[in-house]
Length: 187
Image 1 (cartoon, rainbow, N blue to C red):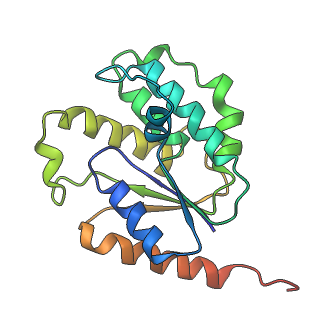
Image 2 (cartoon, rainbow, N blue to C red; image 1 turned 60 degrees about the horizontal axis):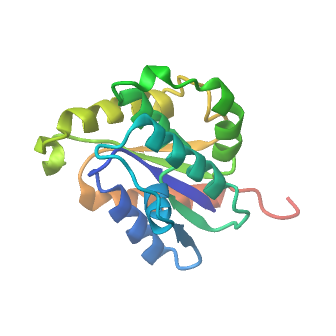
């Protein structure tokens, strides 16, 4: 099973990825593009620019091309479209050259877990970049849950809100249902 955990920063996304990795020992975790790029020496602006988000978008598409069947991705290309959309100069980004690449990359997933910011459960919402974080979350809700760009056709999406302490079990229960619904060989 290939799954990606998507969401704005400081919503418990990476914590959920680590917990899933611990509970799904046959799966490997693919670090988020930011981490992979920093390891290679890429220097991000502070705060990151649209160009920085485009570089991460490209890395995310490349990561999803890995043919391994049991991977947990920390972020997916849709995350970076959300960050671009929420950026001050995001309107200069043209999605059309990326549409086919993103759609093909997302189609490699069996499940996309969309972790949403939830001010009633996320204490970090009051942090200094809360307005940007919530703007990214709004954009991701449109892109992932609403599929406003028509990029997620045929991919199972699990929107995830609510208390952090229930998220892992919610995802594991959903994976179990997907596994039970999967066609059996020779059926």
